[in-house]
Structures are given as structure tokens and as C-alpha cells.
Amino acid sequence: MAIDKQQLLREHPDIKDFLDLKSTLWLNPGALANDQIWQHEQFTIEDIEAADADLHRYAPLLEKVFPETVKTHGIIESPLVRADKMGQILAEKENFSGHLLVKLDSELSVAGSIKARGGMYEVLKFAEKLALKNGIIADKDDDYTKLASPAARQLFSQYKVQVGSTGNLGLSIGITAAGLGFKAIVHMSADATQWKKDLLREKGAKVIEYTGDYNTAVAQGRKESDADPHSYFVDDEKSATLFLGYAVAALRMRKQLKDLGIKVDRDHPMFIYSPCGVGGSPAGVCYGMKILFGDAAHTFFVESTHCPSVGLGMATGLNEQISVKDVGIDGKTAADGLACGRPSGIAGRIMKPILAGDVTVDDAKLFDYMRLLHDTEDRIIEPSSCAAFAGPVMLYNTATGKKYMADHGLTPEIMKNSIHVAWATGGSKLPEATVKEYLNTHLD
Ligand SMILES: *Cc1c(COP(=O)(O)O)cnc(C)c1O
Image (cartoon, rainbow, N blue to C red; front, side, top):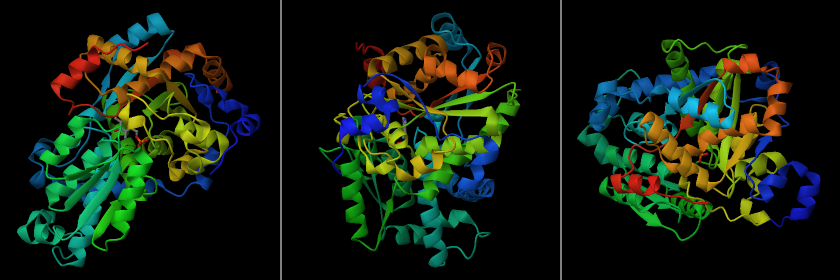
């Protein structure tokens, strides 16, 4: 679609920083108070609980296929940890106040990223459907370890599961599908790092490499899959299953907050900062948090200054009708997980009344935050995940951030009790050498 950049800017002056590749905090004018939100939304808390119930049903199967999940009884969940030392540094240097926590999806087993939630769920659900249809299991009360039997593997081997990815979604889908016996095919964009491709091949998935971007890889993967009746395409830009799998995080987190003795209410507001590529996983996570915590939850996406796709889509209302490339933005970033130039339409529409705002961050900062987290908390997460820390920094240090707090009655007193969750979306599978290289990366 031809887009007149100057015309667009006249109609939507709030996209100026996005167009100028400037690190910014954009506030979402479509955000509504909690009692106004849900009449506009299609998924209910029951839908999220149903996804959680599905995952409990699949747990015995996961234990069998992926022995690393035995210690958590086939439930894949990540720790929520305090990051007080890093919070202290941000308080000294960046005017931060409140409690900093990190949700370590980087440590989710099997996939090592937030994609374990939605991605594994979607593959398992497809496997369940085939197993029911072909009599591997009689009904949903049957023994799900039968999905790991030779008969089931024989059945699954007749099907392809395909996906387009910049890396982590491919890892999640590829490892899960290949583990169950499917022919797994991952269409990888040029942004994907070599080690992710190597790992996938080692796990038995076929990796097709593209010189083009994420959207090219998805389009080609979808086309090949659609032409084959024995092929299932995991569609990050459209899938409700992926979305609900991501949203389950909120149910689990409610319990974790309780276990940590952390209250979330009007006087103890919670801010969620979720690194965002196409928008699927952060939308799922933030939707779930909002449905559970209502007005006490303030949800922000964080994107690269070189790929503000969801922000641009939401600010202009064009959603998936606009790609950053349409306005001359290159989409190139060291944060492979954020390198999606055209946003998901479902994410933009669903988040319209929910999202508080969108933060953009320069690549250089990602490595600074990575070092800071490593030095203060002794944790390693990948560059894309480090984007999350730009959230609190921009909230406390920009005019728009201050306006947001003022407009929501978030006084300095209340903010002292505020909870800030940086969603660490990936990283535990990073090879040692890559970690070293990242820790020594200094951009300007
Ligand atoms: C997938 C991913 C994101 C962003 O998720 P989208 O669903 O593409 O918006 C951010 N960081 C990491 C590490 C990811 O794997």
C-alpha cells in the first residue's frame, strides 16, 4: 500500500518520534478504564482458564516427550524474581521508584523463551485434535501419554507443522513439533541468529533460510503450508490459540505475586513492560494481566526505535495495513525478537482499549541493560528481552511518562509502592560465546 508519510504525520502528529527513530514513550489514546474495556473484547477469563486446563491435560505428555519438564510435572512456567539491586541502580541514575521484578520467561523449559507459552500450546492442541480424530485417544479424559506412542508418532509423521519466525517462535514450534514426531519446517527470516538455526536442525527440524524479513518468511511459509492438506501453519499474525497460550501467564503470575507477598491494587499499581515484535506474545500477556488486575495493571509494549511496528499500527489505526518500511524505517535491530516490520492485526485491535503505551529503545541500550542486569543480578537474558528495562526508564524520565502518572492519580507516594515487571522474553538457550560477545558489545 502506498503511504504518504507527510500526510500521515499531519493526521497523527504523535507518531513523530517513531518516524524520527527517536527513543520515545507513546501513550495510547484508545486506552479505556477497566469497566469500559471488556464489552469490546472477544476473549474472556474462561477462555484463558480453558487454555490453562488444556495445558494441565497435556502435562503428562510433555513429561514423557521432554524429560526436562519432569521436575515441574509437565507444567512449563518461569520464575518471577525481585531485582532489587538493579532497581536501586535505576533509582539512583534514572529517577526510578518502586519495586523492580523480572519475569524470567528466558528460563521457560524446552524453548527458552516466551514462545514456549503460545507456541508449544498450539502444537500440542493440533496434536490432540489429530489424536482424537484418529482414535489414538478416545476422549479428553484418556491417557495423554498415548500421544507419545509409536502409533501416534506414525500418525504425526504424516503431517507437517510450519511456521515463519525471526528465531524464538521457530525454536518453540520446531522443537515441540519435531519432538512429537511431526515434520517440522521453520521459515527463518534474515534476522535469525545462526545458533537458533543450528539448534533447530540439531532437534530434527528443517530450517529454510530467507534473505528477506520476517513478513517474507511468514508469507512464504503460509503459502507452502496452505498448498498442502497435510500441513498445519502456526500463524503468529492471526492465531487465537497462540494468544490464549500467552495469556495463561497471567493466571500463573497472580499466584506467584501472592507467594512473594506482593499486593497489587489501586495503591500498589503494577506496570508490565513487554518486549514486542509482531505483538502477539505481549498482547496475550498484557491481556491476561489486565483481565485479572484491571485498573491496577498498566501495560506497556517495548519496541526497537528501528522497528516501532505495533506503535505505528496502533497510533495510525492502520494496524497490519502498515509496515515500518512504508514510512522508510529499515526494521533492522540487534533485537531479533523485535524485528517484525508489519504488526499483527489481532494484537493491535485487541490492545486498543487496553494498552497504556508503547516505548521504543535504541539498540545500544539493550546491551547496557544486559550488562547491568548481569552485574547486579547475575542473570543473562537476550538483547530483545533487555528492551523491557527501557519501560521504567522512559516512564520516569519523559514528559509523557509524567503526564501518564498524573492523569492516573499515580502520586509519588503511590509510585513508591509500585511494582514494575520487566518481562524477560528469552535467553537461556544462548550459547556461551554469544553471551560473551553480547556483554562486550558497545554501540553508540
Ligand atoms: C517473540 C519475542 C518477543 C516479541 O514477541 P512478539 O510476539 O513477536 O511481539 C520479544 N522478545 C523475545 C526474546 C521474543 O522471543
